Length: 261
Length: 372
Image (cartoon, rainbow over all chains, first blue to last red; front, side, top):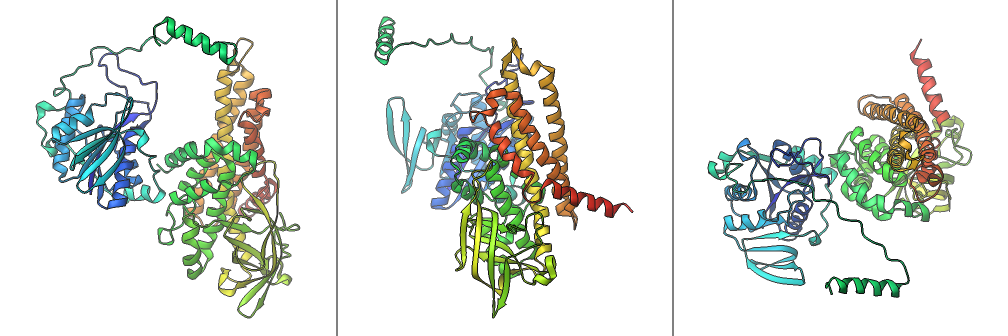
C-alpha cells in the first residue's frame, strides 16, 4: 500500500499571536510542532504499512523550517518526505493550500490512500482534507476514528455528534482522522539517525509540481482575513453549595428557567 | 531532536506517574521497557551491536530530560548505559559483545554493575568476594551490596578478587546471568530517595562463571571498573543536573504565583538572589557536564572532567532542591509538591559512584600530577 499523509507544522502554544496588520499568525519566537491530529494520521498510515506492507509518504507545505516537522515524522518511521516551499506559496488560504497539495500529490504518483488529520490547532478550519479530496476526485470519509482495509476498499467508522457511522469507500480514497484514532508512536533513536542519514526530504518549488501561478499563495486565495480579535473572556461560573439533592434541584430549576431543558 | 524526543517521552510517560512510583517504591518496569524499545538504553553502543550509535553528549542530553521527571528512572538508564553497556563494549570479547549487547542496548534485558561490598565502598579495591578457577569455570563466593537494579537485572557485571595477594591489581570483572545457580538476590534497601530504583544485596554461593565470561583480562577488573565509573559519573552528573533544573523551574513558577505581603514572592530580593544563584550555577554545571561528555568521546582519560562534573552537579542538585523547598515554604516540605522528592533524590548523587570526597581525591591527584 502506498499511503500519502499531508501534515502541517503549527505553533505549539495556546496563546497564538496574530499580526494585526495582515491578520496572519506570528511564527517567530514560538516553538513549532507537528499538528497533533496529523500525527494521528501518520500513525494510522504507519500502522497500515506495518500490517500490509508498502510505504508512507509525507508531504507538507510551509517555510523552510517545516523540515523539522518532516524529520520528526521520518524518525517515527515514515519512508519519504516532500517539502513544498516557495515564496509564491506563502499566504495561502485553505483552497490554495489544498490545490497546491493536490498538484504535488499527483506529481508524487500512484497511491491507495490519503490520510489527513481532522484539523490544525492553529486555524481549526478542517477544510483542507475535504478540499483536497475534491481536487483529487477521491471519495472522502471525514472524522474517522477506526479503519480497516477490505479487498480494495476502506471501511471507516466516523464520529458524529450523536453516534458513529460506518462507511465503505473504494480505494483510492481520502480520510481525515481524529485523535481518538490511535496513540502516535514516539520517534526512536535509530529513527532519528536514519532521518538524517538515509531518508530524503525532497524540496519542491511551485514549478516543480506544475502548479498554476494564479491558483497558489496569497493571489490564489479567495478568502481574506478582514479582522482578528480575541473574544471577551467568559464570565466566571458559579459554584452551588448544598447537598447533592439541593444542588441538583437548583441546577434543574435554573436550566428550566432558561428553557434549556 | 534527541533531546526533544526524550523530553516528550518523559513529559507524557514518566511525569504523570513519577510521584506515585516514588511513594510506592515501585520499579518502573513498563517505562524501562519502552525506553529500551525507543533506543535510550544503549545510546552510545554501535549500531552493529544493537545500540543507537550516538556520542556521549547526545546520551547525556537525553538522560537529563529523563532525570528532570524521575531521578529513579534516570539512574536505571544511566547504569545500563554507562556501567554495563559501555564497559562491555569497550572491554568485552567479541563473543560477549555479540551475546549480551544487543538485548541490553534494546531494552529486552536489563543490566547491573556490582562492585561495592560491606567493606569495599570508597575503598573499592578491598574486595572480599573471591573468584577461583576450577576447570573451565571461575567459582565466585561473596556478598555484594547496594547494587542498582540488582534484583531485576538479567545480566550483571560482578567484580571479584582473583588474586588477593595483588590487592586492587588482583580483581577481575565477570559477566554473570541472573538465572545461574548460586546467584541469589538478598535484601532490598529502603531509601531516602530514588525510591523507584531498586537497590539490592547479591549473595554469591559457588556461582560458576564460564571462563569466556571474563570481562577484559584476568586481574584487569579494577581498571575496567574505574573506567566504567568515570563514565557512570558523567551519567550521575547528568542526573543531578536534571534534578537541579527540575527544582529550579518548579521554584521559579511557584514564586511568580505565590503572593505574600500583597505581591508575588518573586518580587522580593531574597527570592531573586536564590533564583539568580540557581540559574548561574545550573548553567555552570551544564557546561561541566557537557565538557565531560565530550571528553569521554575525544580523550583517552577523562577521570578529572567526570569527577568535576559529578562533584559540582551533585552538590548543586542538593542545594537547588533545598532552596526550591525554601522558596515553597511549608508547602515545599509536603509531598504535594515535587521539590520534596527532588531534595530526597538529589542527596544520593553526592554519594554513589564515588562520594564527593572521592571526586575531590580524583581531581586533586590529577591537578597535583599535571602541575609540576
